[in-house]
Amino acid sequence: MPVLTTDAESETGIPKSLSNELLSETMEEIEHTCPQPRLTLTAPAPFADETSCQCQAPHEKLTIAQARLGTPVDRPVRVYADGIFDLFHSGHARALMQAKTLFPNSYLLVGVCSDDLTHKFKGFTVMNETERYEALRHCRYVDEVIRDAPWTLTPEFLEKHKIDFVAHDDIPYSSAGSDDVYKHIKEAGMFVPTQRTEGISTSDIITRIVRDYDVYARRNLQRGYTAKELNVSFINLICAQKILGRGPCLSLQRKEKKYRFQNQVDKMKEKVKNVEEKSKEFVNKVEEKSHDLIQKWEEKSREFIGNFLELFGPDGAWKQMFQERSGRMLQAFSPRQSPTSSPTRGRSPSRSPSPPFPWLSNKASPPSSPKAASASISSMSEGDEDEK
Image (cartoon, rainbow, N blue to C red):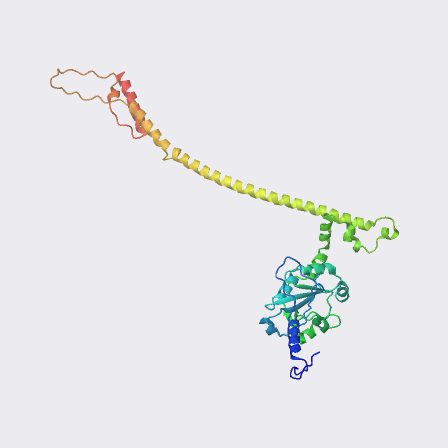
């Protein structure tokens, strides 16, 4: 075995060649191997126990200002958000979106408390823990889900998951005998606040269901659920038939019949409402058409009256035509005056025979009025008497 001289040793007593090898191996070991944020959304987020952070490199403490500048470069900033996430809704999704976008390169871990822990400190949940875990896995902002998360964060939990910051709304969360379960996180400078979404929460959704219980009970009965599945007899404090074991609970059956009858009544009301709406539409259409017909009738009647007055009015065309025809008739029956005879050259004076109807040869001007026409007719009759 070769003997190493002092010159070949480093200050720590380790040979320089071995020291360089250990240094290179140490450099390789301290490289960060933290999981990176999800780039594709073709699969749900993994659970922490399936892809836990095995990085052995030391995680230096970051300030919020440093993290917002994008440091460190060689690893993402690990942000943790926890909750119950019962009846997962848009308010939960918006909070996780804020936690995910706090820093340029963030890896979001979401802790979900178990049923036992939630029922102990907060109350009964609608969804069980498995359903709540799966709901978080399918949120696009989540990179990793931690099942059975602790109610109060401990230094061991923060160290195990290499958590840099904790994201939650800034309202003090009093629970488990503490005024604020995030107080020690805030004092350590690891707390980053997010904003709550007003108007939506799990409690609000449950309140809506409880408030409109009868409506939703009838809704589900209509969709095929039984009264037993809906537990509609819970309101009845005592069910005598059930206690005595004399067959099915009568109150349960009555309750179910009541809801089914109410459904039928609601359907009938809906039909009546539809008929009323259709009747109103029909009446409105008839009114519109009758209004149009009346307007057209008025226009036609005005036009007819105008034409009638133009034809038969005091100065109408019919009067003028009657006067013209009367004048022509009177002119036709009025006698003509005999022309004065004068001797002509080259002809022997002779007496021209008088026409058989002398009044026909006279060109009398047409009478100017019916009175003149009657006067002329009377003169004609007098002349006839004189001739006789």
